[in-house]
Amino acid sequence: MAYVIDQDRCINCWWCRRACPTDTIHYFDQPNRKHWIDPEGCIDCDICAQVCPMDCIDHHPEITPPPEKLEAAKARARAWAGDRRRLKLAVRGYAEAQVLRIAGNGKRENGNGAD
Amino acid sequence: MSILSAEFRGIDFFGRFTVETQEQYVPWHMTLGFARQTFDESRHTLLNMKLLEHLGSHLGEYPDIILGPQRGGEIPEEELDPAILLARINVALEGFALTTFEEIRALARDLGEELIEHCHDYNMADEVTHVALGDYWLERLSQEQPWRKDRARAAQEEFEKMLSMVREMAANFVGATAGGSNQNGGTPG
Image (spheres, rainbow over the protein chains, first blue to last red):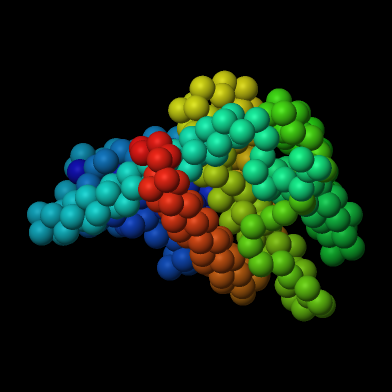
């Protein structure tokens, strides 16, 4: 099973490429200047289809990657998910810490105000 | 504030692009498309100014900043090819903005900031049009000149690497700062 990008409708916004957990969406190696999904790295996670603003990524159950390639891709996806979670928690923690600091002081600490 | 700065920069860039590319005999309907984009950028500017006020700030409270290296000096003439500018700004930068706005939207939703969530959703819809516009015109301009397409693709790749580097730097900064605040009793995730 794998996903396929409709080459005629893709606008090359590279959102799917940035979102792909296995780094299996390519662009710069294409003479036709369009994005494509290498089925050997596709783990059927559906993330690319969900983020695509043109709704031009479809599921093709008839395409099956070799099992060993699929396992390697899943390992890459697990590492990616760990990194993403750490970053998300860090961003959230940073945002909350800033809000609490401003709310607690009633002013911005790094200001050049008269007080 | 840095998004507002980028929107101001967008008005400047697309205003110039609309006018200056006419000297290179681009189709009139391309000019019309980018006039529309300039108008979009000015709407985004107003929207972000209002959001700043909604957060209790105002234009002028923070310095006008944009993340990433700034370019100084003369720009080589071949880099002013509209196909290269479209690849860098419309396709790469505006495409990058899609993810940024989506992340801000998700963060705003987590923090219960409904207005910011709604406005960035609205903003994002325009960015999709901008990327599509850039991609379409890049294709049209380089239809008969494959070398021009290759050159634009190379420029885009280089530009994307720079954007990814900036993004990584920002993530490292947030990671380090959040780690520090947690040690000082900040909220763990």
